[in-house]
Image (cartoon, rainbow, N blue to C red; front, side, top):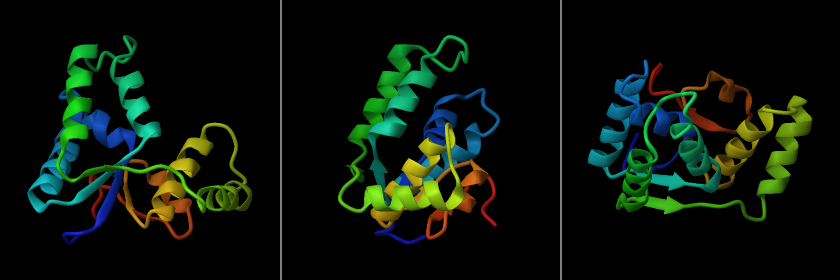
Length: 147
Protein backbone atom coordinates (compact mmCIF):
# COMPACT_ATOMS: atom_id res chain seq x y z
CA UNK A 1 0.00 0.00 0.00
CA UNK A 2 1.42 3.31 -1.02
CA UNK A 3 0.95 6.95 -0.15
CA UNK A 4 -1.90 8.51 -2.05
CA UNK A 5 -4.02 5.37 -1.91
CA UNK A 6 -7.61 5.88 -0.83
CA UNK A 7 -9.08 3.63 1.84
CA UNK A 8 -12.70 3.34 2.86
CA UNK A 9 -12.88 1.64 6.29
CA UNK A 10 -15.97 -0.42 7.08
CA UNK A 11 -17.71 0.15 10.42
CA UNK A 12 -16.16 -3.07 11.77
CA UNK A 13 -12.70 -1.50 11.49
CA UNK A 14 -13.79 1.53 13.53
CA UNK A 15 -15.71 -0.55 16.09
CA UNK A 16 -12.91 -3.04 16.65
CA UNK A 17 -10.33 -0.27 16.92
CA UNK A 18 -12.52 1.37 19.57
CA UNK A 19 -13.35 -1.74 21.60
CA UNK A 20 -10.30 -2.89 23.54
CA UNK A 21 -12.08 -6.11 24.47
CA UNK A 22 -12.77 -7.16 20.90
CA UNK A 23 -10.88 -10.09 19.41
CA UNK A 24 -9.71 -7.95 16.48
CA UNK A 25 -8.91 -4.78 18.44
CA UNK A 26 -5.16 -4.99 18.01
CA UNK A 27 -5.19 -5.72 14.27
CA UNK A 28 -7.63 -2.87 13.57
CA UNK A 29 -5.79 -0.46 15.83
CA UNK A 30 -2.48 -1.36 14.17
CA UNK A 31 -3.98 -0.84 10.71
CA UNK A 32 -5.25 2.61 11.71
CA UNK A 33 -1.87 3.46 13.25
CA UNK A 34 -0.18 2.32 10.03
CA UNK A 35 -2.58 4.48 8.00
CA UNK A 36 -1.75 7.47 10.18
CA UNK A 37 2.02 7.01 9.95
CA UNK A 38 1.85 6.46 6.19
CA UNK A 39 -0.49 9.41 5.68
CA UNK A 40 -3.08 7.36 3.82
CA UNK A 41 -6.30 9.12 2.93
CA UNK A 42 -9.32 7.67 4.71
CA UNK A 43 -12.77 8.12 3.26
CA UNK A 44 -15.57 8.63 5.78
CA UNK A 45 -19.23 8.22 4.96
CA UNK A 46 -22.61 8.47 6.62
CA UNK A 47 -23.33 4.73 6.58
CA UNK A 48 -20.25 3.64 8.54
CA UNK A 49 -20.26 6.66 10.85
CA UNK A 50 -23.87 6.01 11.81
CA UNK A 51 -23.07 2.33 12.41
CA UNK A 52 -20.16 3.30 14.67
CA UNK A 53 -22.38 5.57 16.74
CA UNK A 54 -25.35 3.17 16.82
CA UNK A 55 -23.47 -0.06 17.59
CA UNK A 56 -20.73 1.55 19.68
CA UNK A 57 -23.25 2.98 22.14
CA UNK A 58 -25.75 0.11 22.11
CA UNK A 59 -26.10 -1.26 25.66
CA UNK A 60 -26.54 -4.81 24.37
CA UNK A 61 -23.00 -4.84 22.94
CA UNK A 62 -21.34 -3.00 25.83
CA UNK A 63 -18.67 -1.46 23.63
CA UNK A 64 -18.50 1.98 25.19
CA UNK A 65 -20.26 5.05 26.47
CA UNK A 66 -21.69 7.75 24.22
CA UNK A 67 -18.98 10.16 25.39
CA UNK A 68 -16.15 7.79 24.43
CA UNK A 69 -17.73 6.88 21.09
CA UNK A 70 -18.34 10.54 20.25
CA UNK A 71 -14.72 11.38 21.13
CA UNK A 72 -13.51 8.54 18.89
CA UNK A 73 -15.82 9.75 16.09
CA UNK A 74 -14.48 13.29 16.48
CA UNK A 75 -10.90 11.99 16.24
CA UNK A 76 -11.88 10.26 12.98
CA UNK A 77 -13.31 13.50 11.62
CA UNK A 78 -10.24 15.46 12.71
CA UNK A 79 -7.74 13.03 11.17
CA UNK A 80 -5.79 15.24 8.71
CA UNK A 81 -6.14 12.75 5.86
CA UNK A 82 -9.87 12.12 6.38
CA UNK A 83 -12.25 13.10 3.64
CA UNK A 84 -16.00 12.67 3.44
CA UNK A 85 -17.38 10.85 0.46
CA UNK A 86 -20.93 10.41 -0.69
CA UNK A 87 -22.60 8.62 -3.55
CA UNK A 88 -22.59 10.50 -6.81
CA UNK A 89 -23.72 9.83 -10.37
CA UNK A 90 -22.37 6.28 -10.81
CA UNK A 91 -23.44 4.92 -7.43
CA UNK A 92 -26.92 3.78 -8.40
CA UNK A 93 -25.64 2.00 -11.50
CA UNK A 94 -22.89 0.16 -9.59
CA UNK A 95 -25.21 -0.65 -6.67
CA UNK A 96 -27.94 -1.94 -8.99
CA UNK A 97 -25.40 -4.13 -10.77
CA UNK A 98 -24.29 -5.67 -7.48
CA UNK A 99 -27.83 -6.24 -6.23
CA UNK A 100 -29.18 -7.78 -9.42
CA UNK A 101 -25.97 -9.55 -10.47
CA UNK A 102 -25.42 -11.19 -7.10
CA UNK A 103 -29.09 -11.61 -6.17
CA UNK A 104 -28.73 -9.59 -2.98
CA UNK A 105 -31.54 -8.76 -0.56
CA UNK A 106 -32.01 -7.61 3.02
CA UNK A 107 -28.89 -7.19 5.13
CA UNK A 108 -26.58 -7.71 2.14
CA UNK A 109 -27.73 -4.35 0.74
CA UNK A 110 -25.59 -2.39 3.23
CA UNK A 111 -22.50 -4.25 2.02
CA UNK A 112 -23.47 -3.66 -1.61
CA UNK A 113 -24.00 0.05 -0.92
CA UNK A 114 -20.57 0.35 0.73
CA UNK A 115 -18.87 -1.71 -2.00
CA UNK A 116 -20.46 0.48 -4.67
CA UNK A 117 -19.22 3.60 -2.86
CA UNK A 118 -15.67 2.23 -2.78
CA UNK A 119 -15.76 1.27 -6.47
CA UNK A 120 -17.23 4.64 -7.42
CA UNK A 121 -14.46 6.52 -5.58
CA UNK A 122 -11.71 4.09 -6.66
CA UNK A 123 -10.95 3.33 -3.03
CA UNK A 124 -9.84 0.15 -1.30
CA UNK A 125 -12.51 -1.01 1.12
CA UNK A 126 -10.99 -2.12 4.44
CA UNK A 127 -13.10 -4.66 6.30
CA UNK A 128 -12.91 -7.80 8.39
CA UNK A 129 -15.93 -9.11 6.48
CA UNK A 130 -14.79 -11.75 3.97
CA UNK A 131 -18.16 -11.38 2.22
CA UNK A 132 -16.78 -8.41 0.32
CA UNK A 133 -14.82 -10.82 -1.87
CA UNK A 134 -18.02 -11.45 -3.87
CA UNK A 135 -18.18 -7.94 -5.34
CA UNK A 136 -16.61 -7.80 -8.82
CA UNK A 137 -14.28 -4.86 -9.36
CA UNK A 138 -13.99 -4.07 -5.65
CA UNK A 139 -10.52 -3.60 -4.21
CA UNK A 140 -10.66 -4.66 -0.58
CA UNK A 141 -8.26 -5.46 2.22
CA UNK A 142 -8.78 -7.46 5.40
CA UNK A 143 -6.13 -6.40 7.93
CA UNK A 144 -6.72 -9.61 9.93
CA UNK A 145 -5.93 -11.70 6.85
CA UNK A 146 -3.39 -9.72 4.79
CA UNK A 147 -2.58 -12.63 2.45
